[in-house]
Image (cartoon, rainbow, N blue to C red; front, side, top):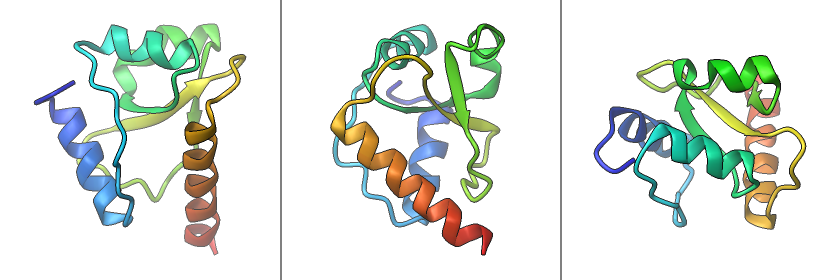
Length: 104
C-alpha cells in the first residue's frame, strides 16, 4: 500500500540487504495484497497480524527470514499451493541465499 508504515519498513529492510525492488505491484489494502499473493502474483512483506486467518488455513506460508530486520513485525509470505511467477522464484531464491549466508 502506498504510504503505509509496513511498506516503508519493508522497503527500508530490503535496502539494508542491498535488494533493489525495481518491480512492485501497488495495491490498496492488506486484503488485496493477500489475495494477490494467494493467487500466485508473487511474494509480499506484510504485517504478521494481517495474515492470521491465512496461516491457520495454511493458504499462505511465512518465509523464515530472521535477517529481515524491519522496524515492524512482518512476514514475507507466498501461496502454498500456487506456482510462483519466475520473478517471485528468483526473489525467493535470493532470499534463501541471503538466509543461508546469514545463518553461517
